[in-house]
Image (cartoon, rainbow, N blue to C red; front, side):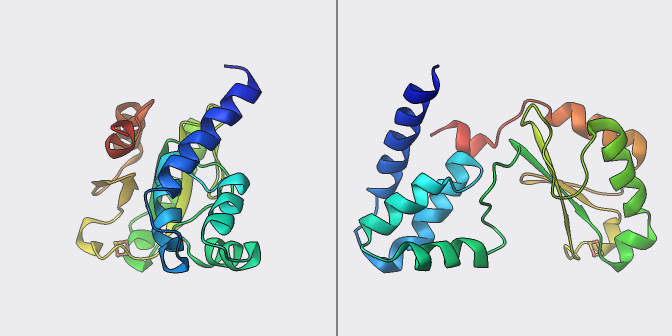
Length: 168
Ligand code: FES
C-alpha cells in the first residue's frame, strides 16, 4: 500500500475509534486506550484528531498521553516483551534474560526490532515473585524463564499479534 493511502486508511481507522465515544473531554483516556490498542502506539494525528473531537487543547491531550506509562508515542512491536526487574527476579537472573533477548533479537529495553515484531520493556515487580524470573509477552505470563525457554517463547510469539487487536 502506498504511503498516502496507508495514511488515509489509518486516519479512517482513527476516526472510527474516536467516533465510538461522545465528544466529551472525559472520554479522552478511553479513546487513547483504544487507539493504543489498535496502533500499538499513539500516532500524532490520532492525538490531534482526539483533541479536535473533544474540543480540548492538544497540550492537554499530549500531557495525558505522556503521563500514563501504558501509552507510547513511538511505535511499539506487535509483541511487547516485559521482563520483570524487581528484586526477586533480579536475584534469579533477569539480567541474563535481558542479555539473552539482546543476543536473540538485538534489542535493549526501550527498543523495537526493525521488523516491528518485538519491543522490550522492563517493569518492576509483577506480583509473581515465586515464579521469578518472570517475562510477559503481551498478555501471556511466562514463569521461571531460562535462556533456553526464552528462545522458545520468542519463537512462539514471533509474528503474533494481540488476538483482541486481530479481531478489530
Ligand atoms: S520481582 Fe519479579 S515478580 Fe516480583
